[in-house]
Length: 246
Image (cartoon, rainbow, N blue to C red):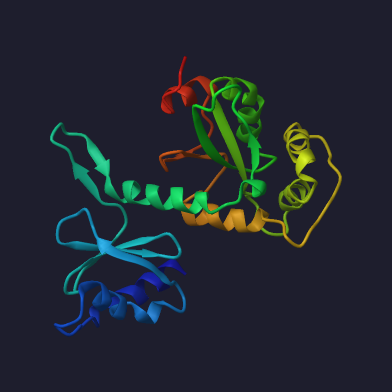
């Protein structure tokens, strides 16, 4: 499927022939118009890489297109700093988008474990209830919260729609708000919780959002600056990364 998609992109870009009076953005959108029914274009902007334009697709993927449309790049773009460090410009560009997407989620659709005392930082965690390292992270919740870190959980049942994990997570998110955190902790400890379902469960929409953000496994941590950190990280290391270590 991915090969077919990029073949379609190549054919579309090579047919690019915008008139001189069109803006570059309009011209690029016109060149990619045949993709809109399959993978809508979210944004077109100047890329941080000189001479290229960054096209963001609804799938979360980015294309880098030159002004004439005769060449394009799929993948990540890096910049070499003066001190020799490499900066992933593609990842840097995704951070703002993640922050915006997470800000659009209502707090009542998250399961939140608040900081103890003053909230000094927060992070969002895509999780499921079964994975070993998800459970390991949750066991350290008291330590994490004690550092002033608020944890906002979103559902990411790795096995997808119709899986046992999705049904367990539906049961949690469909419960009364006051009961969700306790049911969540029970499920994380391997205990059976009452089966519930509801028409407005956000579980699968959160799963789809995670996929768009580049989440491929759990736990996946999104820091408050939009950085995506895959996998488990100990409480002390999290506190250092978020700048709140005591």
